[in-house]
Each structure stands twice: as C-alpha cells, then as structure tokens.
Length: 134
Image (cartoon, rainbow, N blue to C red; front, top):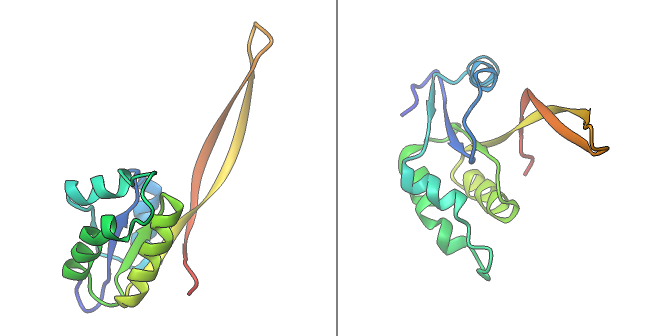
C-alpha cells in the first residue's frame, strides 16, 4: 500500500521496467514503491485471446487485483494489446487511479549486409511518463 505522502506505481505491461523508467518514476511521479503483478495477473495480460469477441471477462482478475491493492491516486503503467489497454485505462480511472504510459525516442540503425540485404534495428530510449487523458 502507498504511504499518504507517496503513491505506488503498479505495472500492467508485458516488459521489464528499465532502470531509466524506474528512476524517472521515482523522481517525476514521486512513487516510493513499484509493484509487479503476480504471475497469474501477468499471464492474463500477455495471453489476451485473439479470437475472443470480448475480453472484459478475461481481464476481470486484473480489475480485482488492482481494486484490492491500489489506492486512489496511485499510478498504473498500462501498455500492451490495444483493446486491453483501452479497457484497463478506463477501469483505472473508474478506481480513481492515474493511468500512465512510457514515451520513448526511437532510433533506427541500418546495417547493410554482404548479401545486399538491409537489417534495421530499433533502439528505444525512455523519455517520460505521460498520463492517459480521459
């Protein structure tokens, strides 16, 4: 649970938080605690059934977990499958939480291979957290 002075950041995305993201969360969001969801919640986020007509039922355990752990004004980092993200942002707002996402700078690096092919890699650098606007 967050302290009265400092909110908590709950992670609802399918990546590991980078050192830069963690440092920024502590400074810019003022969080004193970062909570990774338990394995069953993480699985629900990465195993969104692509053939399902609706996914709200699939996300119900995530809603319950957030409602039981988070307090109003805590932050929730939400990124991932577009439909799930949309639903989770609305649920976070309904619970009085502050949904955010990480903005990045992307740099493309081209490598010209000996066989004439071009390999392109992307390097992502965290820039800031941005609130989802209701």
